[in-house]
Image 1: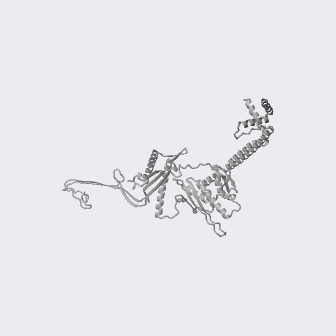
Image 2: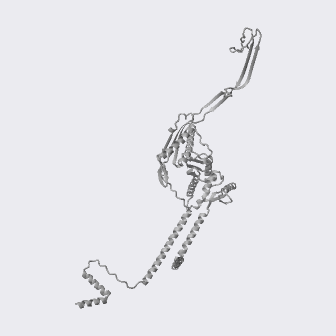
Length: 533
């Protein structure tokens, strides 16, 4: 073991002592440069870049935002006497959306000061205004896309020109926004109000009344929950019909999306609404005691009469069973005998109910539901399709849900003879752009990573060039050393005869070579040939 360590030590020392000065500098500089690059990258990664969140704030609202940021644990910086607040760059979009949802602030504006940093000296005012407007629209669209339930947004802002004269009134700006909403998502009124507030504060001199927001289905979002446009009877009925269909569609989309995936199902609902309205009045009399069908006794009258004697006359005028009131009653017999009368009269009070009924302004008469299910799935990068059994299971579950929705939504007057199975349509089909086309999930690489990578690449190229240059110098030195130790005379290599040679020519060539290389032996050979002759 010690011998190996010693050999390694001697090899390292020998390697280092045999290196030139430039090579030693390269070997020492490369690790140092890599260390500097790593430390710089770490510093850039951990360094927090603060950008302006709001500017031109009142002191009251600056304190309100400061308190909100403290409660969230968000670091911030104050400038311009506390009227400008800066936060970490990666949290700007989220904070703008969340604070706007709370109606914060009322006096601040989103900062667009970066235009002055990214423009050249030769740009005109018109070009600058166009760039600024485009950047405002892009930034505002990015902010809106960060709101839950919104996939994409398109923003169009109309900025009026500044007046040329001081006595002219500055016109107000306007904005139109089209949202691409998630299927089945229902926005709350506070979300809509926050969206109006965000847009109003992002654009100077833009009152909320000049903002129009709608989705991809041309459904208008009003900030106070009511339609600002006058509606006639037809418009009202169409709106009610759309609201009913949208409500059922959203509920079904959420339920079925939880079963098979939100992106794997599409629901469409069509409703038939009965707008016949009925006003009627009912007057009902009901007993107080329903079990015995008796009313409440309010008065009791009891009459008792008795007569005795020979000429007794009985009866009360008009008191007989078949007598007429106020007419003389019949006599009880011929005057011999007794007469008695017992009578009890009870007056009952009953419940008297008066109802004024106004029927609902509309009733759901019929519903049709269409469901499309994506039958393609991605499993370990491979596309698989639902089997027939799996489709039957999914279809049974969807049918059960849709049947329940139809039975509970359709009015009882029209639902007696309703067959839910006839109102349901379920289709299994691969969606275009669905699981069959796997989206690219490329990670977002920060800009500083590109800078560090470029520096590393340049450094590696420079080191390779230096190593190649040193290698060439070493090779040149080795060649010079070989030339110094090389012999002055080299053996001649006999030429290869390409022509067909005879035996005589071969022997002659051998003799010539022998005479050149070994003249003494050649002379002895000649003397022996001469002696033989």
